[in-house]
Image 1: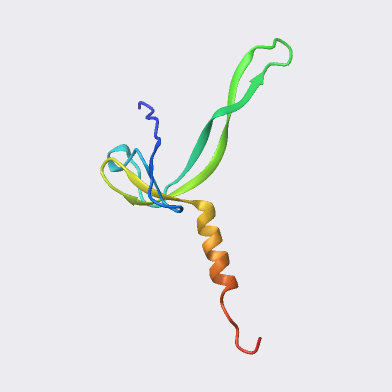
Image 2: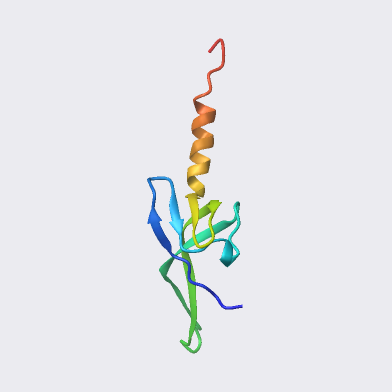
Length: 96
């Protein structure tokens, strides 16, 4: 199977982004994807100095929330955690 490079196609707002892959590419709601930096840590063989490749740097992880044929809408996973924390901390308990 041929690898497809998926990119961020648009930012809808501070919390949602669009990626350039959709249902035709096998993307499904609930998938967790990583946004990688083009930079990465180069790994070299300490004995020969041969370049063994790069370890990619993960900028953030995103969660697919809506899928169309050729694009998908995602939110950063950290946004989900922050929403849960805010909902939890904003809940009032009687008597306190």
